[in-house]
Length: 413
Ligand SMILES: [Ca+2]
Image (tube, rainbow, N blue to C red; front, top):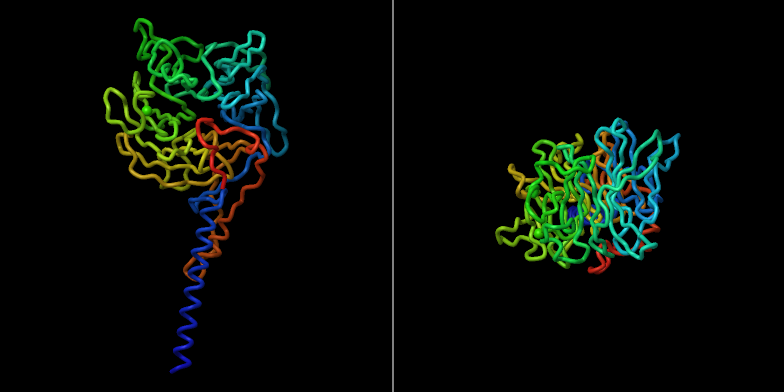
């Protein structure tokens, strides 16, 4: 009996140790940058070692364009046999703080309508000034042949330039413009700063823009009262639009766009319940530095379909938001994956996969291979199978400023 009791004690001890080891591996697994948070998908590197690929744009002809923030290059992604190539290089790109080549969009009818749109901070050294610009580059075969200015001399600053450009499901081009560190701009309808702009692809004002005909208003304005936005996404079913917005030391926001809506900056921020200002669907304190976003339409995980996926520069995670039926609230937040560094762009690719970029790489979220059968009830082998598969270091991030110099630098695990 004594021996049996001792054996039982040893067995119990072993079970506890195995359990503790299993939990330790679980903790290790989910706390590692690069470790997938969902066990059904994992990040797969498309390119690493790139100089700040800040924006992706998918052409209907299958090409994938990406913008390099500091070089001004708009690149076309190659494949295993074709090297990446340069489509166009924008000259005189300013590079202080949050400046640079910041946004990229391809015409939805490309190449029949052969335009690639970009937003950048121009270092106009000849005139001793710096400002933001929206331009379009005419495509001619595999290269761009020239650049037309769509919107010029948008006030710039070292911070709060925003700069994301994307076509909406209505075929209009949306441009996110930050307040250029002058918060009064955001409530001033006469100019583009602190606004979401909406224009036709040829630069004309859409006749149904909310401030058309209002004396003194900039007719390109779609929404106002914004601070510094790094992301926009549309629900593919309802066509509702959302922007991600960076607060100061508190109150990052995800906002549901309503034409003509006033999102409060600088008078209120976060969930303020102060009409006429529109509250975000979710606010974050402490801040996460939300970047670009996309509605998830991939097949795996099926439970994530239709959710709003938002990248975070600070915590490197894809935040997954399940929204209420009316799209105006968040039911729950989970995490779809963790990137090896701060996330910049987030897009659904034409291959049906979610793509993201960091300061040095382009990645796709792909279905994970089936895990081996878990052992000992703690799934250690399965968890080990989920260990980071992402390759490539990130030598650039340490050389670069925070996305928002008002803040402490983003946390690096
Ligand atoms: Ca707000």
